[in-house]
Length: 116
Image 1 (tube, rainbow, N blue to C red):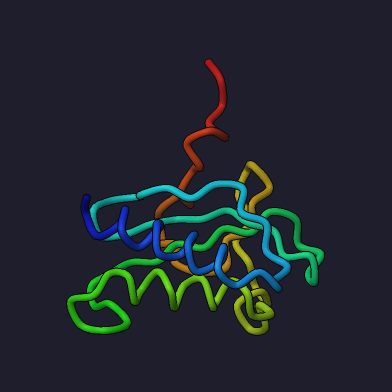
Image 2: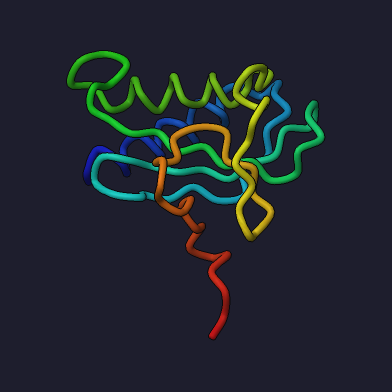
């Protein structure tokens, strides 16, 4: 299992353990061995689907990918605040609030890809 897979697993497990939150995960996937993405909705925010990409290293705690997943989950639970001031909305209607790469298209969730 690579770091991205560990980060996603830790993020999902942290959300499962923290039962009192308003986050609905639509999809989480590895973007690369050193990055992961999530599309979620926050019931306290009227943004529709929200995208958030996290890249590493460094991890929240050196050499500990679980720490990055746990920190990421806590960021999803918190109100979006300044992150949501200028979201980059893609052609699928996802408001990317963090982790997009300037000059590159936003990530596309694997199950949301246009059907050919």
